[in-house]
Every structure is written in structure tokens, then in C-alpha cells.
Image (cartoon, rainbow, N blue to C red):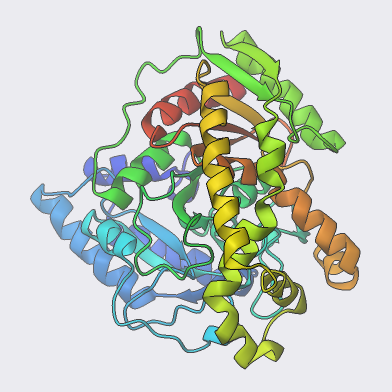
Length: 443
């Protein structure tokens, strides 16, 4: 297939700009036109920002012409989830509670990315206040899944994933509190990186649970994710050259993560394991009982903090919220400070035991999600289905958030089915190298 700008990766576009083959202004106009013409654009983008995009693209073109590019992605357009503050433009986090909220400054991570030359296309739809793994949002819009437009895209970075999968952005920036980068990335056949909590700035990012919130990219390749992470931090990208699976020790987590695994995710996971083994990885299986205990702490850790942050705002106008999300927030109202502190103390102890149990492995493997993207219409009409599918969607990804590390999801041979590689805190560069080798094996 002849590659056009529309189906190039972010890295390829950046390289084309650097070589003088691609003009950032023309690239910007091509992308804006693609968004404008797409029949699903209003289900994907909360707001497009053409003036900013054109201005930043013109600056990138001038730098490229003068030989002063700021980085490998200087001039490449990306979309941003609608919880990153944008100066002078509304940032509403998918909620009527924040309608018209207009920040005076960019989020710190957007400011850094702009300094590195990334071009802002606009803001994408998301789950309300980021509190769902499904991406269903009747308050604003529900983005479609690339493999089934009647299904949800995964949340909460639903529009972020859809913008990339449908060719409306080369890459996107989302957030991940319990799986919100990895679930939509997996369901839309993308690569998604959950960064370590605290690694990438969340200043100017609308919070959900500040003790778990992280920022990360969604893209077509591991290379793109490595370059995007560097741009978000203003650092150097991971060196992926020569990455290999030969001799890598990988642990398939049998505790919780394989329970109730449906047929397609199971096929995709098994096929991925076979491919990784053929590429030289040593794959073992094992249980880590501490995971089950950590999962039992989820309600108090996530919902109580979320309600602590948003309770007053919510109770001032609860009728503005999607009832399913409102119920989830209110479920945190009953926990006391003693329970919350005790849960965190126990989680710290469990994280230490987890670290000891997996210390001999290069990564821990799980199916990114045990289910396929659910039907949006049924989610709206069947309460029990909504609750069960949301919990299942978030279950495996939440392990990475609870254990405090970084994680990378890669597509498998089954559509909308991903495999996740989890590593320790601040091990993104090592994980990305491993992911680059795994990506070659899986493709």
C-alpha cells in the first residue's frame, strides 16, 4: 500500500517534515479537512481548534525551513482529551457540570508539548469526568469503536482513541486512572502507554483521583508512544534500536486477570503469547495472591477520593449528570477517613510484595480487557449490563494502577483485543524497548 500522510505514523510524519518532504502547514490543513469531512467528527471531537493548529503549524514550518526543529515530532498534529486545560478554550471533561469552564492557561503537559513543536488539533470527547472504562456519554457524545460503530470506544479516553483509529489525528494524548488509555487503545487496535503515577505532570488536568491519575499517549506504534512521552516531558525518547525478546522473561498473571475471559480476547491473548515465545521470550505462568487483595480495596481507594474531589460540585446540580456516573461517584460518599488511610497503608504493603514477586521478570502479561466493546444502545437501557461490563472492562488494567507501575497495551491478531505488558515504576524506557520487540513479533 502506498503511504499517504493520512496513514503515516507520527514518527513517519515527523521524519518527513525533517527531510523537507512534508510541510507542517499543508499537513495541518489536510488533517483539519479530514476532520471537517468525517461523518462521525461530532462524536469524536468536542471542539476542533483550527486557529491554534494553523498558527502552531506555521511556526513549525518556519523552524523546519531554518533548520531549527525542536524535536522529532515538531510540526506533527495531535488531539487532546477534553480534560487538559487549553488557554481561552473550554475544557469541560465530558460533563455538563463544567459547561463553559474556560481556563486561562494551558495544562503543563500541553505547554511542554507545544514547546517541543507538537501541533494541537483540538479536544476529544470522553467519559463524564473520566469515571468509566466504557466511553458511553449521553451528556456530550459517545465516540464510536473503529471495529463496530454501534459499540463504545472504551473509556475514558474514548474520543482520543477514535480520533487516531479513524484517521483524524496521527496520535492522541489521554489520561489513565484505572485503564483509561489502555482500554480504548486496545478496543481500537492501537498502542497505549500508561505512565507511572507522578512521571508526567498533571498540573492543569481535570482530576478524577489525584493519587492514581496519569497522562499517556495513544498511537499506532510503540515508536510513536516513545516519541510522544519524550515530548510530553521535554526529555529524550527511549532508544528502541536493536530491541529483542531473546531471553526476556515474561510472567502471565493467573490471579484475577484470566477470570471470565471471553472467547475473542482469549484467542488474541493466546496467539500473542505463541508469537512472543517464537520470537525468543521465555513465558511462565504464575499467581500473585496480593493482586486479589488489592482489587478488593478498589472501592474505597477510587470512589472515596473521586467523591472527595467532586462531591460538592456534584451535589449542587446532580440532575446534570448521567445517572450511572452519578451513582458511581456517590458510592464513595460512605467511606470514612480511617478506612481510606487504612486502605492506602495496606496497598503500599501489597505493592512491596508485588514488586518482590515479579522482580525476576522483564514484564507481566495480561489481556488488556477480558471483554469486547459492548453495544452502546444496550448499555443505555440495561443497568445491570452497564455495571457488569464497566467493571470487567476496567478489571485487568486497574491492576497496573493499583501496583503503581507503567504498562503498555499492544494490538493482537484479534480485532479490539489487546495484550498488556506491565513493568515497575519509572521503567518506561525499558518497557518501551521490550514493547518494540513484542510489536514486531505480534505484527
